[in-house]
Image 1 (cartoon, chains in turn brown, green):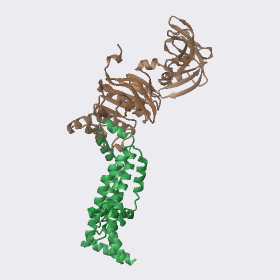
Image 2 (image 1 turned 45 degrees about the vertical axis):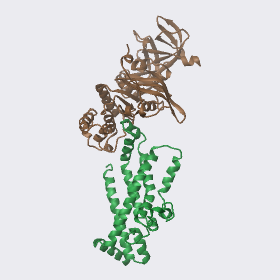
Image 3 (image 1 turned 180 degrees about the vertical axis):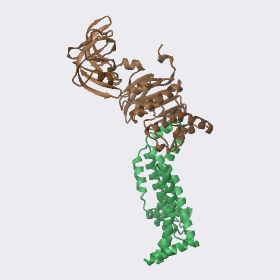
Image 4 (image 1 turned 45 degrees about the horizontal axis):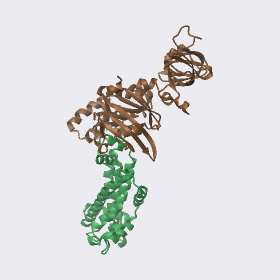
Length: 371
Length: 232
């Protein structure tokens, strides 16, 4: 049994169609948000993530389609439903008053009593680490503090589902990192169901139970995190979820569930899978699965794929470095700073790259064959 | 120069001796312009907010009309209000021409587009997603509008100042629809015009000084509130 079938469906959309200015911006036949889970919407800018988010939150009226909350259709323009949810936007959108009053605003709107407000607000201010800012004017907050306030304002209402529309994308990386941690903690503690959009993969991976890849107003793939990350449904999903090497190839040999595909420059890649000889495939290799060494050929290795190549480019990416290699085809690997220094890696240096046959994710090239 | 100094001396004298006529004129001016501003706030904030938050065919034209209305010449307003209130005009049955009520009406007509225009701009100036954020906090439409108006309160204070400033200092409409009747519909501006015409410059200067003091005092109070809330 998978996580998907165990968890109850909290929110469901069917046959959704959203139009803006006469053009279809979103078309989703079916989408479910599972109770107690975090669904991450990832996709490039303009893919329709925010539109989907607003529609799910009952803030945007679709041209067609139905929304069901706990199995019941959402009625009366979504007013009652909106009191079960909360939303955090990219912009903190705080009111021109104190931090305390901001966090209390949702409760006041919902008619929660003064005593209850006095009890709940400080608790959530503490959860998001802004207890000491309680009396400060919202105008005098830093970007991170403002977004913490916005998060506290959403969570203090103890929503059954919280929508987070790229909440950290306007923040600097260290602030984003600490805030993601704070949010992660609160989500896990409160078991709040959440839909969070982001174009930052790491953020999605950290928070999500399931990932939906949105592209061109459609869901390109939805499923548990490992499934989407390691078995992307198509080329777009693969490129978006961080599979940096996607090699088109043709299957030339098969044996015992392992096949060999010919890729660029007469190189061959071994991968695991049942495919027919002659089939066109895409071989996806995640950069963290590629091992680099400076010995010409490792004496003994279980890696079925070993190539020599030249380093074309080294890009520092914070905790690790991205190495772009030319092995006759382009291959991307991630190495730590320590490995970089110990191996003395630099541009134009020759290295040996290896990866296992099981590290190659294969996508049949359906689209190409049809066209 | 002496003329001005004498005028100022006279003004101080009139103010500190609480001259009954001057006091009466000042209070009436405040009462008329205050009431007209309140009326314009009620209508202007309602209309401005509505136009800011809705989309309808011809909206652009309405916005242009409001903006044009912000510079409505008081004499034109005076003329039309007079025609409307004329004995056989559409509102002639009210029989309020040459009364303080008529001045209030004319001044409200002058101030309303000013308040509407500033309200419209202030509400539109709020972040686009703020409405959605308020709705996502569980607000009803009415709660949403109320919160938005509260958020725009500082620019709206500017609307109060501009509206009041526009009407307390206006003379054309007041003279035309109020008639400048002594002890009844005579306000600071109409009295100043009359005294100047008569060559009583000292009294005219005194009235002007009082007019400026009144305008300054009201704006000073509102500015105080506005600046107190500004970010440091």
